Length: 575
Image (cartoon, rainbow, N blue to C red; front, side, top):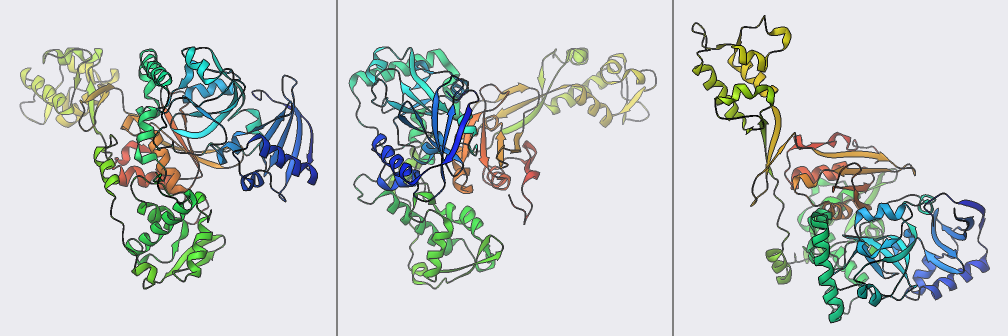
């Protein structure tokens, strides 16, 4: 509906009576929203505008704009949430999953066809024809589109997942999204709770569909870091709190406890007096998050505090720490009372048996960088030089092998200078292979090091990549480095983009989850432009420093295989 530009008829501030009516309509249209959530969506005092517009097909649409973003739109007396709203309330609508490459088609105005649906382990959500649904991508629960179901779930299964599944109304990156701040979808980890029981018919259909997709798509099923949806849902590294069903505490209460646990753990074990004053952002990213137990994810926004500053104010009131604004808008922890009872009595938690079992039995082993070895390929122009040693055009050799072949060739053909063993006479074959045309009548001898260097330069590059426990992979050309760039979006916000992670055995979805937690910034995984079957990670803000620490210090990747690290913000500069 919004794939093309629309025409605005009017833009006015909402009246008090219309605001109350809209809040009531929202509650009626989305009964899963609580009263507080409906009030957040339709605030009582904050600016809220009504924009009347005509879509490119002539449909009259009313859009409600809050904080500069479209949050709801109304069409033929039906109320719909935008993707901006669904990112705050991802469980508002039943969600169906598709692949990242399908999103491009949806943005262009296409409807979602059933062969593009990914069937999760718990089966498809139960919907009826005409129900409003969200569309999400593999590995991320943040909705990227909304649509109306063209048939019920049972009809979808009966059809063998063929035909049109959803009439798409609105997508991420369409013109309605562009009328807002154009922010990217946040990373919302897939649910990790045990799936409910599904009917035998649906379970069989899920199995048949997955088998059919494996046959049809082959390697396309390995998108998002070569993890299927089932693996992603079982991966403890991208999960949330994993609450015990028997635990009566709310998610917010559990997040409060986790935040305080990580806070005290960081003060007791990681922060030293010499670290003070310590930027609160550094304290959070480098110390608090690293104390989060395996398999759990700390998200301050889901706690009762909502913001780090509010939590630290509470800790200051309890006289555990002292926070000051040492420069305008930047807070630092300037003092810590390490003798405070809450710190002295804090017991560092032992890893739970469940967590240990997950770590021991998980398919997600600790990352080890690949061994990358440069190789050389014999081109047609040098085949005569290498044929005596049994090699031909296209042969792949190591540098040491090339040197030995050249040395043996020179000795076998009596090319070593009798008076100076460091010089080699150039025969016609060597002249043709390594000399420039202008040199062929002037250069008669070369030192060994110059001869070998020239020979290596004339060979075509290749490389061998060996991942731990796997057979070596040999490819021609040079391996593309991990590429880090900064981009400026239309909203004048910087984003950090990283590409080519897969070449080094890194899962873009896992990297995005780690950065989203450490940077406390939204992340998204999308297809890399101009690269087939490759994904890129986008993080809001200049996060090159965090990215560099992750790649260099934790993943132990050589600096020469990473480009763009110099783009990290200089100390004292705003990101």
